[in-house]
Structures are given as C-alpha cells and as structure tokens.
Amino acid sequence: MKPIAITGLLFAAACLAQTPKEKYMTPGTGGSPPKLTEVKFGDKDVWIVYHAPSVKGRKIFDGEDALQKPGTIWRLGADQATFLHTDADLDINGLKVPKGEYTLYMDLDQGKWQLVVSKQTGQWGIGRGGTSLKESEAVGRAAMTMSRPASLVEQLEIKLASTGSGKGKLTVEWEHVSASVNFTAQ
Image 1 (cartoon, one colour):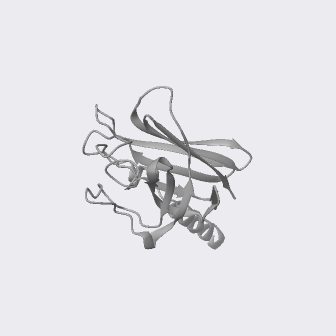
Image 2 (cartoon, one colour):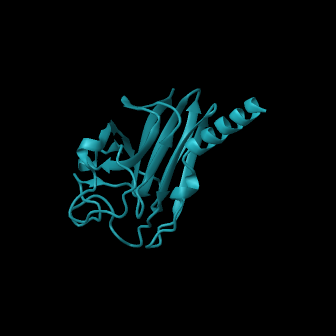
Image 3 (cartoon, rainbow, N blue to C red):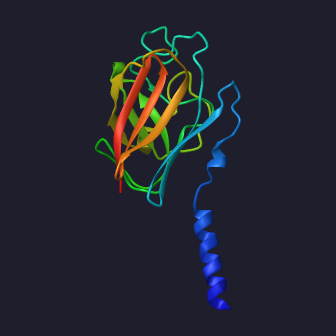
C-alpha cells in the first residue's frame, strides 16, 4: 500500500509543479483578449500567454508620434505581462534560457528589434514614462529578423512553431511589423 501512496504523491507533486496556462488567461481591461501559443518538443512544453492589443487606428511603431517609440523597451503585449513557460532549456539565437518562467519584452532599438527575456514575472500594465524592465532581472537579448507583413496586422499576434527536430520559431506581428527568431529546445 505504501508504494501506491508514494507513487500517487509523486504524481500529484509533478502535476502541481507545472504552471497552469489558465492562471495567465485572465480577462484584459481594455479590449485586449488573452491568447495562447504553444509548441511541444517530445514531452517538453513551451508556451506563451499574452494579451493581444489592437491597432484601432493608432500609429504603433516607427516614429516619435508612435505608441511605441523607436529605441524604447516595450513590455510585449498589453495588460498582464506576456508570460513564457518552458520545460526545456532554450537557445534563442544564441541566448541561453534555462527551463523556467519569464516575461518577454522587446527592445525596439531603432527598428532592429531584440527579444528581451526577463526573470521578473507578474507585471501588469506598462510604464508610460518608461519601461517596467529591471535590467538586473534580464536573462539577455536575442536579435530578431525584421520583415513586413503583406497587410496590416490589426491585433498583436505571437506565434510559436516547430521547424523540425528540437527547433522552433517565435514570430511577433503587429501593425506593419513582423519580427521572428529561431530557437532550439534541449
């Protein structure tokens, strides 16, 4: 009887150790619905929960009159911080990201975007006078490949896709901007 009880406890502990995606699928406050993108590598999950704002006639990027000004750091998404969960160690274009939980930012770096992965999680909203990123919590930055979508992307889209054995691609599209980065899962 003891082995069955111990096995049951170990199974329950393993299940509880996973962060439930639903915890981050909270309703937005300004019309930015929660979205989920995920990819699986064997028995390892990589997923992102984010709140997807819409353009709504605004200028989002490219100019001093834009919502997200060039050279600033944008806490990707709206409302609750964009949350990355990975059961695998990741290599995101040279950036080593150990399995765990993170917040994603984007360094807009004058149109040469860099994905910023931060150990700080749980932020809400954005700092209008600057960013909520604490540089001391940043794991690092990964250069993104920039392109332009064929047409306006009204609502922010973040996509994870498998590109082959243990390899994937993260793509962020909004307004007239598309940024992507390849990664490997170990």
